[in-house]
Length: 470
Image 1: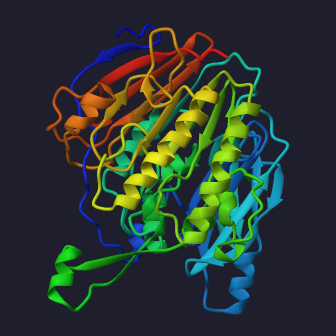
Image 2 (image 1 turned 90 degrees about the vertical axis):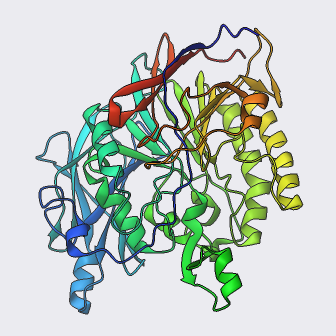
């Protein structure tokens, strides 16, 4: 079957695998920052920027400070703001909202009325603690004809000192001056321990401080480590050492400010942001980008049920209302293929089948060009798929890409992936690599999707897309 809408070039690589659990621990002072140049004041950490609802004019700036011993010092740290401007002379100041989170103080500032497509300098301040000079670039306006590039990677899953490969991959991205970057969930291994979030931000500090970040919720954002059971047989079920529990992704929701999805929930008691931070969208130039929650493990159950009921309706309407020719969906789990077609739990299999059929219709009606997920398994690219079937020549169809985790391991895609949905697979699935990184360039002529083995400077695979027909 021919697919003239997609042009393929393939080299050897595999982006896949399951990482061994990494034990979170409190970071040392040396781990609190990669260098004094990156973070001049050790009391100002985890600095990053995210897009507001209008990515071209609104940016959120976020950071953390420790809760000091004295009440006076806490009050100083609570007095926080951001200086910003088109040069490092700044010129404008915006106050930040501050609240206690993860044993410290979390700060968020909303910068509005910005100029589209413009690089800004900014510096955060909490009391006497001052951060370094940082930058962000506002989004392009919807009517632009300018070309832009963004980067996407799979799970990071770092402990307190961060994933050891994350500094290298973020430095590689920073050198290419992309417009924003995405991590497809599982940013920290134990999402209920602030130390893991500290490791995530500090190990990639140069990129976080120079480029806008787009977060996606993953199942590890809900995990915490609890003592293993005393029973020997029970220990074997949990690798002999640990037990992992699931909770509401409170720290994830408190680390990031993202565009409000305007979802009114009666479950706000489960977190400051509740449903509002779990899914969102924004326009960047000619692209509409949607981040969805599809872990299928959201806790507590009432939150999962609310998400199942409200998120699909919201996303369908969101895609209907956008005029952007390009539509990209970001998720933690890939829609095609799932990491496994079968599990030992029948209720999970039934849930996945219903879940995918529901989203197939949303993607088809919303003319989604490409979805990207990760979570587990080998790198794979699907045929164009529409309503659960490989689309015929000349039809619309959504291409699905699954990325591997960041790490030094490999895992071959399962046979069912090749037989059912896969169109392109790595030629050497057993080769260990450090990560599969995707660069997406959108221009008036089309969209180019490149997968790189950044550690070897190797372009592993590329293909092109055209916007779907109305």
